[in-house]
Image (tube, one colour):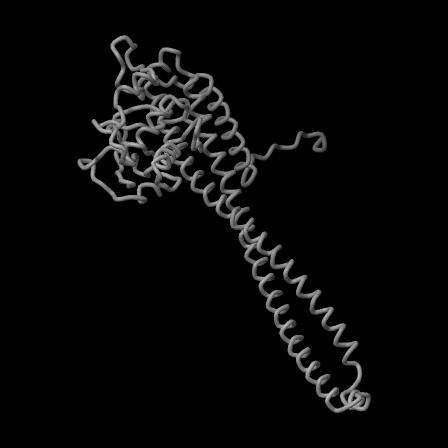
Length: 357
């Protein structure tokens, strides 16, 4: 009978067709991706490729370190200013409270002595001369009260201004601290990435990478690319003329062998700009904290005019600095994992030079 016939299946059309096609396409893509992931393993980087990536991460870390140094310097300035403003507000508040107390005592005394009108006081006076003396006293007291009130008002305004400035400095300090935290995370992320890449190398490959940036003044007894701090010290002795430049170079020589630590200014460790700042501070010259401010702190000199003591800068962003010691060499703090050492100035991309003194 018709009622027992199997209903005819209608072909899919319209939205149903599109939905089914999309589902099949996604399933096919997922299957292809899965097979692709199984069949194509990530190729192993060559030591040269790893070295290039590590160099890039170190360069980015050093650029971020200099930004961190600049932000920290400004945060320290904001904190010192905030402390000074808070101290000033406390001193002004103490003076204001003292002035308020004096004004209150004066007002109370006026109330007690001036509660009677001039006519009554004249009637109570033994003679007109006594009345005139009392009137003169009240007049002087009134002038003093006006001066005291004006002083208190002025001090109130001053305290309010100081507190407003302190509030602005506090907001600035909080912003600087946020910037510090973000930049610190960036530096540490780049350094962690470099460490992971270096871990992929064999011990021999890591040694070869380290040897690239080692001083070139090794003795004959030392292995190729390696040098002791003693050999590095004897390679370029500091001038003995007693000049500021000589004193700065002598300090840098004394720092050879100390570790690079990002953000450090000594005495036990340094980053690149921390070393040059400390060296010239030992010579009595104050340099700013960062590479990009140190390059403008003195007179700019060309490469063919370099003299011992000059600051030499590298990379397009002026993110590295060393102290020139003559004979085409400098003392610098290269990067994390290394130590302060002697190196040729042509070992990195040249950016410029300046003479602090």
